[in-house]
Image (cartoon, rainbow, N blue to C red; front, side, top):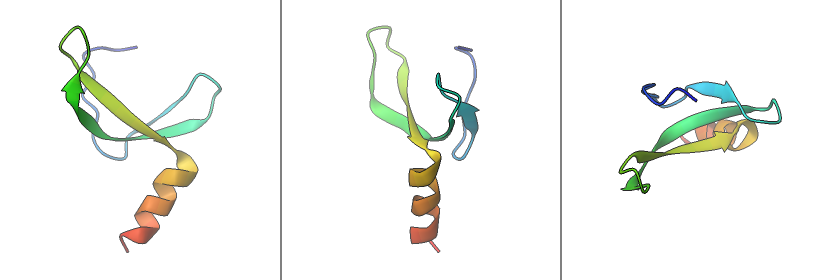
Length: 54
């Protein structure tokens, strides 16, 4: 994983099983290394979120 990558809302990547997941933001909490925790959603959840905002 690229630790220096800055993700923006809607960016996508493949999870470990090869499914598309979409970035939705960073948590307000940090991990033990004081890094922000990335929040990702599967494609079906992300697309339903988009439809709700229309």
